[in-house]
Image 1: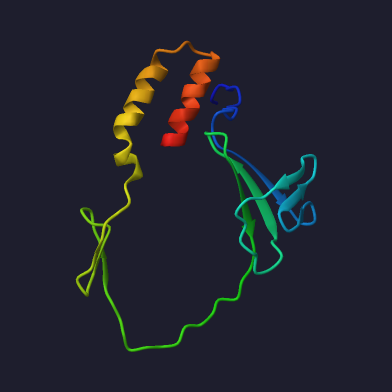
Image 2: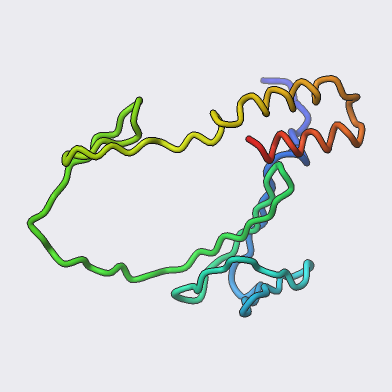
Length: 144
């Protein structure tokens, strides 16, 4: 028999989620009303095809909030054509098409590696538990 261990709690600095299902929430034009939270303004919302079956609020490590809706849709059938194209996913290029086009992969982290290294050096020199350390942790989380 293995010895009992204390429970592992989620870090407050990691990703947190909350799911609302059923009639727990109401969605308006630009606001969502959640129980025990209240009204929340939604920015950049697309029109939903049907009434959502659930709503998930996600808080990432950079203290940004996102809302994810689950809604059922009826997929549209495309018309059949005789045109086809082959796609080869690769390492040096993201995708190579059979018609000769090459698509490069987006590399946002590679563009910011020097800035990230500088932020991490400064972060390592701060005192644990301090306010400046938390500010620097947020800058690193937003960048990566």
